Figure 1 (tube, helix red, strand yellow):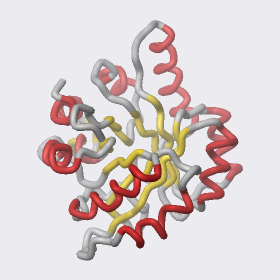
Figure 2: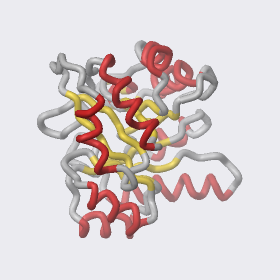
Figure 3: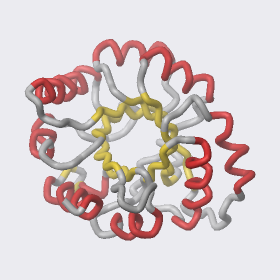
Amino acid sequence: MPADTMPTVKICGLQSVEVLKSVIHLPIDHIGLVFAPSKRQVKPDKAAELISYLRNEADHGISVPLTVGVFVNPSQEQLKEIMEVAPLDIVQLHSQETPEFCKWVREQFDVQVFKSVSISKSENKIPSSSEVAAQLDPYIGSVDAVLLDTFDPVYGGGSGKTFAWDCIPVYQEWARKAGVKLLVAGGLQPDNVDQLVEAYRPDGVDVSSGVETDGVKDIAKITAFVERVTGK
């Protein structure tokens, strides 16, 4: 990412139109709606309500974030049913989805596809360029971004814990060669995201539990997080 370009900001796990109304003025690029099993899971009709609010704002000339649906090993049928009710801008896939499946999603719904890569918190070995290429080269042409997240044994991601950031550069090198974005999640919060951005300059950052208080989205924490990333 060029030195003068700020990372995109994704606030994940929104469930409330009221919260969305409270942060719509902030320079947020993506809103994450979790359809995978999670305490932040939204039903399709609630997601449709959030999307409808954003589109109404956009119709009035307001710049709004893109919506990202977060899924873990969804079936084609599940995606079709959800997209009919809640037309997402981006589909984020968080498990063992194949390159073929990612390509199908991209073409079927004319959306961007983000593919997560889970990194173990206890991982102490930085993968080689050839190992990363072997893992991710099959996804070239099927995804628009790769999201590094801390592995969670139940949900795949969303653990609220950081991974060893020194493995980021090898994935970043691959992403630049492949022409896709590199996003980073996993344990980010207002107190550490500026360190990540300064040291590694990812194309985007993704936060969920790091901007919550007692499991509820905290407007002050969201505002602080965005300010630390964008300086705005």
